[in-house]
Length: 180
Image (cartoon, rainbow, N blue to C red; front, side, top):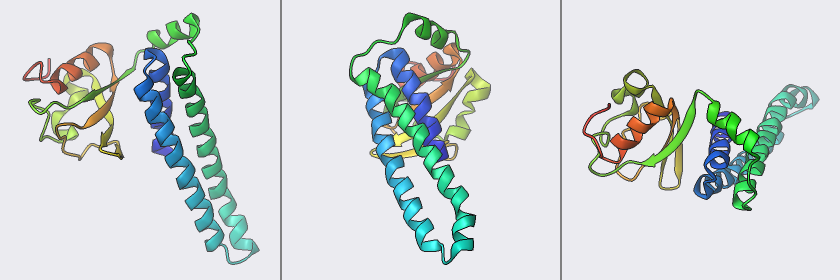
């Protein structure tokens, strides 16, 4: 849940920065997933507590679930601004753009040299100053997919420098045959 909520914050800010409804919709889908996970967590906590002492010991876990849900709700609030065509104030946009790290998303092309390799094998951080932080294949998300083999059609979210992300996008789209 922690990784998903962190991804949601990144996606929500990127959706706001680029006024990207697709990313905003991803945030909303993940928010539903967090709601479901928190519900399951609470249900399991209730089943696990046999007495008052157990309940007291599990209260902290319930609080973490509740706070994670609050973070995901905040990310969904940011995403809903994009979905309702509410523009972000120019001062806030300037702050976003001055950040050293940026985010992008791209779909792995069938002709990309990246397809068939793991994220670790690509050594993106060392090569170009970017890293894939999440991967969506179909309806399933993989957070920190270091060991995952990239496949054509994978939707990846990457974080890094502006130049590093540009290199990664070109490679993913098969515009180049190596990392620049």
